[in-house]
Length: 377
Image 1 (cartoon, helix red, strand yellow):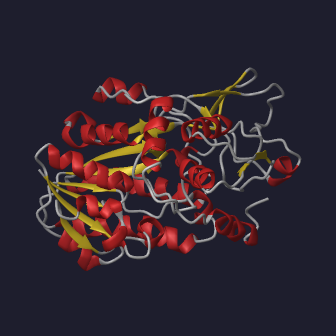
Image 2: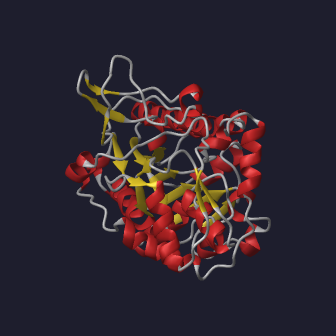
């Protein structure tokens, strides 16, 4: 098939492109080579871009430009729409930028397809676990509940767990399934919800099969080590490699579902190639919640370095406490099961980091930006 990946020079996109090429597909990539992801001189310095540049038809452009999208769409059978601004914290003060790219770019893509001849048969949209907000919990008093995002007053007092009105006993975290309540707690999450809903709503009306993947926290060799706005694995790794201390937010017991890049690529390809995926929404994760404290311990063990760790009680407004994926649907419909467990994945990630030049640590700069906006406490 002829496959277009928007944002295809990024971490997920470039890995997906290489695997699709190995399976005989023909790839076109539309990407703006954002400096936040690819560095100051992307064409010369970005490993992600260089890994695909000579293997695909590459269009340097943006999903905000109609001419770029029209050129990229021509002759495509499938579109994988990954292009997006990413970063929960940054989205809370770059609101127009995130909505222009994520919502506006998706709207423009669909508008072109709805009003012009094309041969596109399927669109796969990269959604996100962020649309679930605080996720799904079990209450002894009320059954399953979906708490709202946490408030400043509780977290200032060092109380980081979620609350739900009418529940006196502690809530029990459970896996978030695709039918869980959608109530994002960040602008980024709102834009991903909007992207997904537009794709799933519009595509069937114009003869295109939609597929949505709600990715959990994707990691692995090749992810940006210089972008301080996304990915605690990169942030902590850069701190450790620079022999700088680590500030663990809250109490370190907040959890995430970390899914290895190879598993994400395999799941996405099943969505591209299998008709059973059409018109469906799937979680992509491991189904296992990992504490941030565990992440720090595993990284230091793999790098063979110890740096001072402060569990500070600091927090960012818009961050969630817990979330991990229920994989029942993707297992039953597509036969997907993750192959790489966290310990194995972290070892692979750390081995790759050890081959990389140590990046300038921009973490404190990003925190200062959030502090200036009243989002970091």
